[in-house]
Amino acid sequence: TLIAVPLFVFMGVMLEKSRLSEDLLESMADLFSGFRSGLGISVVLVGALLAASTGIVGATVVTMGLMSLPTMLKRGYSSSQATGIICATGTLGQIIPPSIALVLLGDILSSAYQQAQLEMGIFTPKVVSIGDLFVGAIIPGLILVALYCAYVILFAKPQLQQSQLQPEAPQPLAVNKLSRAMRNLLPPIFLIAAVLGSILTGAATPTEAAGVGAFGATLLAMFKGQLSVVRLREVAQNTTEVTSMVFL
Image (cartoon, rainbow, N blue to C red; front, top):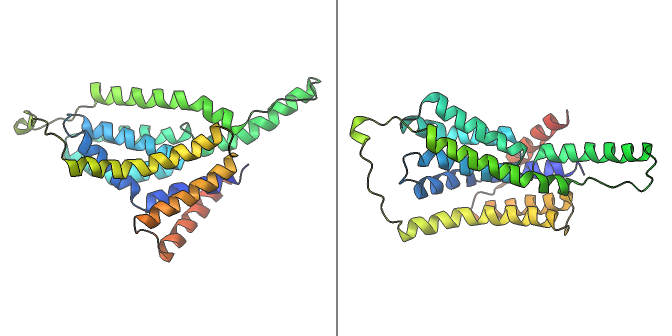
């Protein structure tokens, strides 16, 4: 089961290095540009997508910090609001499947649950699978995303200058802007749905699904023209470092 950990890490690092997260943030910012707190909402939603595609808190926080923090400060968010939104959104990687923490906890809980049943005299013990943990974590994860968005809308409004107090009238989305957003959103959503769907339906074990996710992330990087020997070496090295940290 634990073989799924480096595969999920590889999937996340590959998506990060292929600039997919940058494209996602730019697309979301375009879609929510008509709202005063649109950038904050974009950060939360993109962070949730990255959490579902990486499962690593550190990667999500660092990526979102480098991409969105300067822009948020420039748009009038205070430093506490900007960093708080990024860090809180980054923690979604602990709960939204596929989560590395849930994979590790699933292995431990399954063994402990079976041992407890054997000690109670139940010699056909039930199993707590990682898929069960993933199913149980989906709704709480989505609730957290909704609450974060509500908080951003209500409390994290940027302090605009006097000349910026009159918001521009929302412009209709241009065809090229909408198509660009769909082009950037659909591939990672399809990959996440394929990985989670195969686990939740029982079509694949977590390890098999993680392998599919890692291969799919590599294909996405290749289609975006971001795959090279140097990039692959960098992804493999980062995967080794993060996996070693997790297991240690």
